Amino acid sequence: MPFDENHIISACRKQCPKAQRKLYEHFASKMFAVALRYSSGRLEAEDVLQESFIKVFNHIQTFRGECSLEHWIKKIVINTALKQNRSKLYLFPAFDVQDLPEEYQETCEILENLQYEDLLSMVQQLAPRYRIVFNLYAIEGYQHNEIAEMLGISEGTSKSQYARAKQILKEMILQESSQAQNPNYERS
Image (cartoon, rainbow, N blue to C red; front, side, top):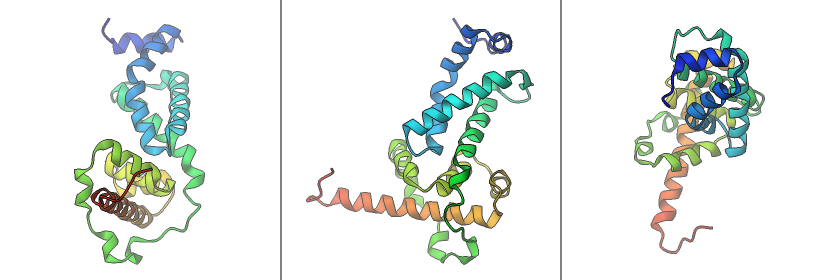
């Protein structure tokens, strides 16, 4: 049976469990991938996904159709992940982009050659503040002024955290690359 978005929305507004299940099954895998990008691992992403769909079902009445249902749900997932990570964002000092050496401001073309799973694993290893800014800018396409507003930080801080995330990822990639090229290296 095809997914009839209008029918599912209408039934979810009436709190129909079958419709809620169908909506969840239709979007869960895509939204889990989004949650995973903002999380440090699968368990945290599962928590974000669960909390997000609870919000979707509790607030489906407010969906006005001004954007696609998928986009609306994705925003809920991102905001839920941001809320969950908000307390972790300020654990480390932030630097303005002008205070960083030029080497941190270079683009990192090497990222383009990575497999998605490899990059995801590396992104998950980033400190939450770097991971969130990297995802919002590089993956979701938000501008630094929008990120700054969403996270309650300065635009310069957003830029510096993105630059630092790229530098850390570059170092991870180079380390992985050098280990892979070393015939005496054994993975644990």
